[in-house]
Image 1 (tube, helix red, strand yellow):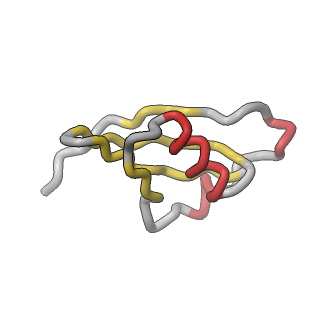
Image 2: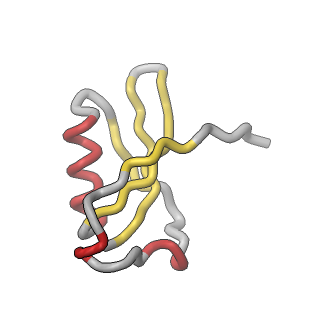
Length: 72
């Protein structure tokens, strides 16, 4: 299992989420399925410490909306 942060862009809306899945590709697929009319991007750089997140037996994918942070 891996955990990545993604940015979801839908019209004027933009937010970030954390996704736990079997792979980066699967995480993007799950996010695309949840927000089909949006653009989904992986947020780089990927932090190596939380990237590997347990085993496949550690449960289902987790979706967690992240608050927007002010730039600057």
